[in-house]
Amino acid sequence: MAIKVGSRQNYDMDGLLKEIEQPGIKVVLYFFSVEYERFEPHKALKRAFPQAICVGASMYGGWCTAGAMEKGIVALSLGADEVEEVFTTLKEGVKADPAQSARAAIDELKQKLGYRSINPNDYLGIILLDGLSRGEVVMQELSLEARLNLPFVGGSAADEMHFTKTLVGLDEQLSPDGLVLLVMKMKIPFYYNHYVHLIPGTVSMVATKVDAAQRIVWEINGEPAALYYANLVGVQSVDRLNRQVFATNPLGVVSGNMVYCRSVNGIFEGRGLSFYCYIEAGTTLYLLKPGDIVAHARSVLQDAASHLSQLQGAVLFNCAFRLLELKAFNKVEAFNNMFKHLPFIGFTCYSEELFTHHNQTLTAIFFGRP
Image 1: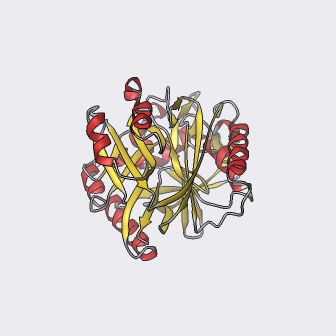
Image 2 (image 1 turned 90 degrees about the vertical axis):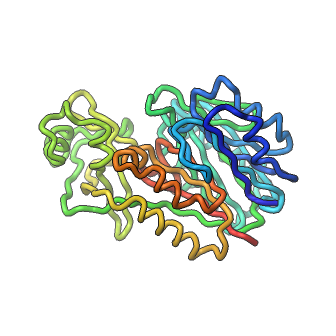
């Protein structure tokens, strides 16, 4: 039928269900504030659409055609005219052993797919995972699996920057320690990409001592990492480093014309820097500068339009640090308005996924018309 979207800033589930209802509904994607767990949105959606696959995650604010929201729920439905087949899996234990969870999910998906050959032009994957787990390990396992030769686009669940419990859901199951993979054989064209509005500066440095598994950089250029970073960004002491400083002064890896952000999470034991993604020893890092995030959103749409003749919908996975930047410059609605001519939803997440694990990035899926 169409791509339909709905949103509510209060828990009016009946109104939301009416907005996304359509004949032959195949898939529902939804994102919700973590405090709504008590309302069991996953069960309400599955009761309303028992024939559909319902996949969701908790968020730190949502994006939708009706406007940006700090708290609430957003949802999107795809019908039989858009999706031919659907395959899913949810595996838990991703915090303790992300590699094992990923392998179990991959093995189950391959079995459900009947070990068929995958044409990445026809199949689209979406990944949602616990925001407190090591997503880079999960993405590495997916990238090494030759029999799942398709893109997995998505993000990690969030919880209002509390970092205590994030949720992912598949049908009637909602997990605080899970990984969800959704594979759709599409009937319509689609396009996906990752977008970074940050610009590399001229200042570079080397991570000289790290604990990659724990995402901690202990030393930069042979000096205590936290102190080096504070001096670099002009903060008088390590104690004055905070999320706003981290969000507006990210570090990144530059490869050709590609920028891969490595966002600082916090100070570790007074001298190390913890990150949202692992960094290997010997990695050259650049201090990045924010570009115009709203103008950049316009270029995102231009990129999508250059690959799809007619856009009819989108799903956005937007980093929490990008939201902090948008709030700091009062550009939240301006960013959302760039996409509001489309039926779209999105959520603010703790990391973004596409081929690898990203920080301070927008990953996006765009749907075209047949």
